[in-house]
Amino acid sequence: MSLPICETCGTQFAPHAGVPAHCPICEDDRQYVGWQGQRWTTHEALAQGHTLRLEDDAGLLGIGLAPAFAIDQRVLYLQTDAGNILWECLALVTDEAVAELEARGGVDLIAISHPHFYASMVEWSEALGGVPILIHEADREWVQRPSERIRYWSGDEHKLSEDVTLIRCGGHFPGSTALHWKRGPRGGGALFPGDALQVVFDRRHVTFMYSYPNYIPMKPSDVRAMRERVAGYAFEDVYGYTWGRNIVGGGRQAVDDSFDRFLAAVAG
Image (cartoon, rainbow, N blue to C red; front, top):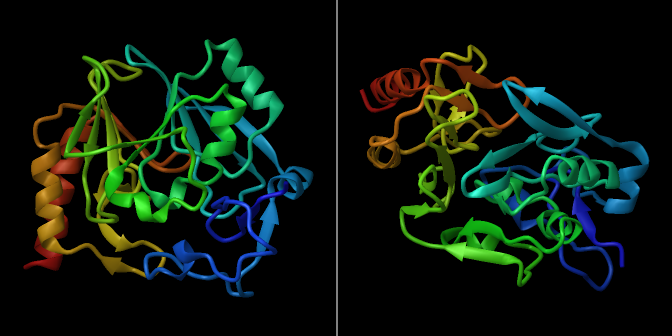
C-alpha cells in the first residue's frame, strides 16, 4: 500500500482510508502548512522525481534528497563503538543508498533528534533489515506511523556505549535529542544536536528556537536547562541539520558563547 507523505514536513503516515485531512506536525505552531495548502505524496511518487545524494560532509557520509524536499535535512552515517548509526531520517529510501550503507558495514540502529525528522523512519528500518529506531518517549505523540521497530528511551541521558550518548535537550520539543560522540570522526568529540541547538549561517554560533520557520525564540528557562544538560560533554565539532551547517573546530567554545549571546539578547 502506498502510504501518504506530507509534502511540507516529509513525514510518512500510517495507512489511512483515503488521504489524511491534516498533518498534525505541520499544523503545530513550530511548523507550518504549505502555502498551497495541505498536500501529500507517496514514497513511490517521490522516487520518480528525486534521488538520494550521498556525499562527504565534514568527514562523514551524508545522505539527502536531490532536489531538496520538505525541510531538507540530511542524514549522517556514524561508525562508532555503539555500532553503525544512522543519525536522523529522510522521506525517501533507495536501493542504491541501502547498498552503499551495506558495503560500508551496514546499519545497526537509527536515532532521530525530534519529530520534524521522523520522515519515513519505519520505511528505512525495514529496508535495513528491521533495525531499531531510537526516539525519546516525550515525543511519542508525534509518531504518525507506529511500529514495533521504535524503541522509546526516557530520562535526560541514554548511554549507548562508552563513546556514544543520547542527551535530551528539550526546548524545541520536550524530547529534542542531541547525540554526543566522545571520539567523533576527527577526534576531540562531536555533537549532533538536530534542531535543539541549530548551527546558524555564520557557522561560528548556534541558536535556540521554539519554532525556526515562525521565528519564535525558545524560552530562556529551556535554554538554561539545555545548557546544564550538555555542560559535561567535550566536543570540537558540531554537525548541524543540513549540508555544510557545521562548526568544525572550536565547537564547545562556540556553543558556550552562543548560550551567553542568546540569553543576553532574549533575557537581558
